[in-house]
Length: 354
Image (cartoon, rainbow, N blue to C red; front, side, top):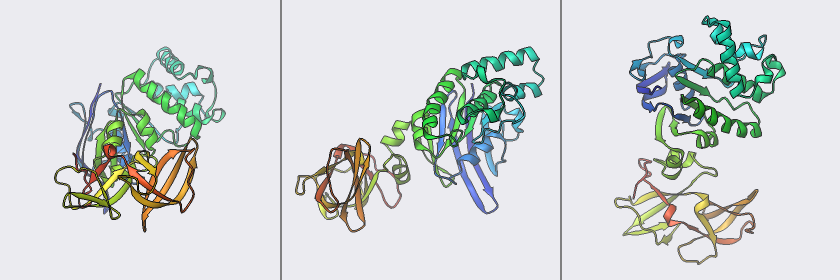
C-alpha cells in the first residue's frame, strides 16, 4: 500500500494563494478526511493529488515515487466526485467496467471484476439498468464501483455524499467506512461536514485558508483542539469561547472570580473554551458559578440548548436534558466543568496545555 506525502505544497490562482507551503503525510491504508469551511483549499489539494491541478511549488509523493510531474493516468488513483459523473447511455455494468475496457482488459476478466465489485456493493440486480433508472444512493454505489474495480493505490473522494438526503447520507457513511476496511486502500476524503469526518476517519486534517490547523484522530481534534479555529469549528453546538482575565493568580469571567487552576504561563488575558455539554445550569449564587439570565431556549429532541447572557454581548450555551425547564429572562447561573476547560492565548490563538 501507499503513503501520500505532500511537502511544501503551494497553489495560487493569480494573486489568490489557495494553499500555503503545506506539509502533510497520509499513512498507508488510513481513511483521512480533509475538513474545513468552503474555500479553505481542501478540494484544490485533492485535485492536485489526483493530477487535475498543477502545483505552484512543492512536491507530492506516493511512497518513494514523486508523482506531481506525472499525468493523472499514471498515478493509479481513483476519484469519486460529488456529481457521480456516470455515462447516461451506458448500463451499470458498463459504467463500472468502462475504465477496464479502455485499458484493454479481456472481456471475461472485466465481467468477473465487475461482478465481484457489484456483489460487494449489493447492486448485482442493477447491472442492466441505466443511471436514470437509479436512485441517488444507487448512483453513488455505481460511482464507487467504477473506482473500486480498478484496485487503485489511492481513493480520492470529493464530497461524494453531499447530494444525498440526510437519511441516506447516514447509511452511506457507514457503508463507505466498511468498504474502506474491506479494501484496505489509502483513502483521502474531502468534506465540510464534520459529522462525516468524525464518524468515518482514522485521521482528520482540519484546514482553514490554505493552512493545516491540526491533524489528529477524531477524538484528538474534538477533545484537544490545537487553536481557537479548531475549537470553534469542531463540535455541534460549537464550543463556547469566553474571554477571561487572570490577575494575581485569580481567574475572572464577566467580573466573577472562579476557583479554577490554570496552567503555568497562562497570559493575563485569555480565552476559556468549554463545550455546551460541559456547562451546568445552576441557581444564582451557587459555588463556582457565573450569574446571568436566560437569553434563548431551543429544544433539540432529547436535549435543550439554553443560551445564558453573562454580560452584554457575552453569551454561553449549555446543553441540558429536555426536561430542564427555563424561560427567557430567568435569573440563572452557569458552572463550567473545570475538568473539561480549554485555555487559549488570544494573541496567538494557540491552546495553552496544562
